[in-house]
Length: 158
Image (cartoon, rainbow, N blue to C red; front, side):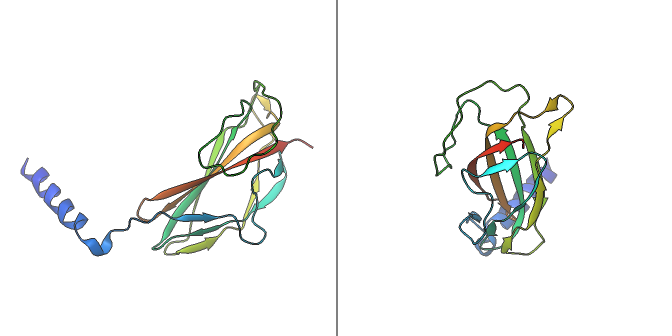
């Protein structure tokens, strides 16, 4: 019990140091030159494209992730800003739903991605369904604050 009290006191002292408190979320900028992808873009299974976006934070960035999930039911997220033309609603047979995570070099407060990215064409169940998808970008700073942006994209087979 005594160890628990000492741990609580130590954490309280560190948490009360106002100089170290960071309450600012990082930012994702998709307005930079050659930003890609952006809302309503079409991507292709199996083809490499370059993810280009600018991340910034008042202190230091940590990591980002890209999440792709199907939008065959035409749902929306509150951080989507653009409405795209959607295909008719459908039930997926083998939709792509996956997450990729990347670290940002330590100590940077600004970072422009230059990531060559390839969306897989299939999994053990067969070829992924083409159609409407959401690409969610999540950015985390070293203090643990995060922000998200969502893009509506089409992912097709050529």
